[in-house]
Length: 243
Image 1 (cartoon, rainbow, N blue to C red):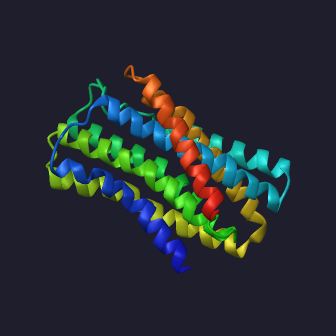
Image 2: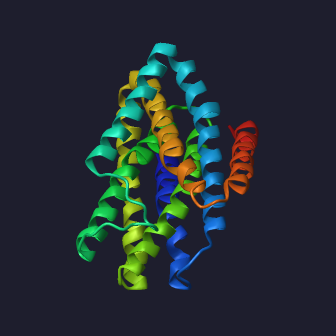
């Protein structure tokens, strides 16, 4: 119980850690932004394919795995339809400032819900080290996201301090959903493989739908590709050593 609380808090507050630089400067080069996003994508792919999916198979069978992965993909797709993705840096939507900022915050908050569930389910699986690894992967994904959200809010004339607080709060929702995922799968053991598969599907959706396209959108595809591979190998090493 103590471990899931610590892991969920760290992964959730990584959004705020990522937003910290916004208190000191307002810009980051496209190259470094793309490299960080691709690094995160590699870490999340490795976490899904080498930790979550094998653990789901060890608890059940390939049919449960397929169902869970597809369910995670469908849920994220529905979230995309309810709150469409908005490009934080290239947005040209003709929406009032306050309305646009609220839409961005709602979108990021909703997308963080499955990530929190992933952390909680991973801790509930009973596999030593899995919860910490997934919390680490989610935390790394949250950091650049927090920076971009805070940057967007500052560009919308929100104060630096308020932008930092709001960006941090979008990640804090993961603490609640991770606890829900943990308790649900702890008391209903048969849900563990479904939860692990769901988490894998949700993470793979985020990688392919969000992280990879955004990391290749500004002409830095080669650097992003190397960063993706380094991130994947880094996570594989961590799984091998601590998983």
